[in-house]
Amino acid sequence: MAWDPAQYLKFADHRLRPALDLLARIDAATPRRVVDLGCGTGNVTAILAQRWPAATVGGVDASETMLARAREEHPALSFVAADVATWAADPAVDVLYSNAALHWLGDHDSLFPHLFRQVAPGGWLAVQMPRNFGAPSHTAVADAARDGPWADRIVPMLAPPPVDAPGVYAARLAPLASSLDIWETEYLQILDGENPVAEWTKGTWLRPFLDALEEPDRSGFEAAYRARVAAAYPPGPDGRTAFPFRRLFLVARRAQPGA
Image (tube, rainbow, N blue to C red; front, side, top):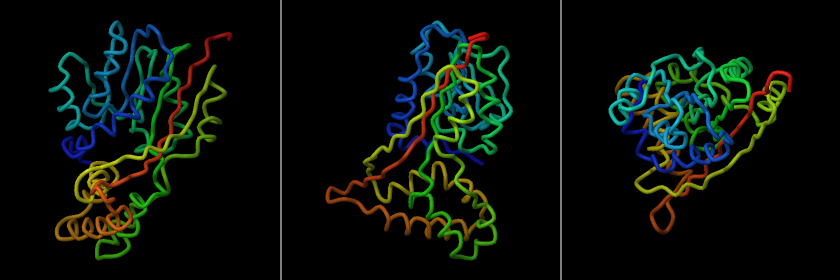
């Protein structure tokens, strides 16, 4: 999918908060190597470098567009283009951090154990993923997909929610972890602007569906989606819009040999 850094960063402050909440729960004092997996524009990678200034900190992402922005804004850091699903650490890392990236990938049964194997014994895997897929912001995509001449292209793209319940991740990682912390938070985000929830998803979840269409269907589908979202999230008396958004977090420490 073609990422648009400017669209994604329209709500940078709200997108940053869960990244910081995840970072605050990593109890790693002096890691030597830290990787931000699915780093995007690198704004969180830079915060990881500030948290652990003695560590070698780098970012990995599949989007050259996002990485170009990251390299421009954070020239002192190293950014690598790679398929996040198959990326392998060499050597293993002490902190493998991933914020709002892994929900784009399938087969979490295999993915999460694979990622944990990239972590050195005693190191940390820290992940945050959206789990808002049952909310109107996301279900409106399916509703709009079925209601127009674009249905034959968009409906086949629809899929079950990509993020499992917290207990499923606990079952995947508990046999490999010496400690495991999994929780969910629902943020009540207060957004400015006209139909801001549609603007939010246009930078993320809506983008691959728009990329699959050409005009005039692209504009028609977007308009159908935006109308549904505007009805589901009306502005309050002050003109601002409340957007509840649920996210899943996990922080796992890899067991030491013989522990």
